[in-house]
Length: 290
Image 1 (tube, rainbow, N blue to C red):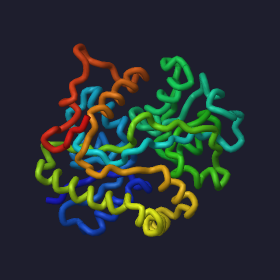
Image 2 (image 1 turned 90 degrees about the vertical axis):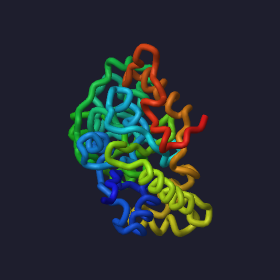
Image 3 (image 1 turned 60 degrees about the horizontal axis):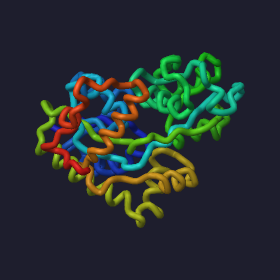
């Protein structure tokens, strides 16, 4: 039975989409999800593997989830989160947002976690943050324009077309203080040998996509055809993104540093004796580095 791979249909997924097209459902099928849905779908036996944002994956395990472990890495560079407000709102800069209600897609999503990272950077008391759940990008855009929320956070290039269309304004950005995408799996449903094969083959497509030759022309054409982004935006994004040579590789430091920041933000709480790395990473599949 083919593996069920949950993913977010954004430009970051381009090497995965190329792999899926070549595989044609022989070894895996893609299941499109929102960022906030991936962990619940892993938990509810709707997918076997999730390629998801680093912080929600690590937060889920830290908060007690046994439904999955980390088995690999997907994007090695930070995600740049735009801070987005309504086109006619009164907010001009991030500091104006203190004490207001922020829009999020779901509790535990990247838009939720990054609000805490922003608050830490701004020196705001994290227990004063207020949220309104708006489910998806359309709901978030509507909320900043009807003024039920002051702002929301979303990946820069994904939301730039809405800014270009005059639907919203960007008032700043907050890059993640960790590499942005990792890979998790439910080890009860996905056999370890299957996972290793999937990660090895994905690594091949990632390395090709990440090459200078492909970045110069073919990647731009692929993303333009799949997502309809302007060439200038695609080229700007390609100049900022990096992928790992080996998708089975996981840095111990990435996990521990991410946990440290999430704990400072109040998103997770360290148990007595501290977090144990083996609770987060399946070392029989992933290849741990320092």
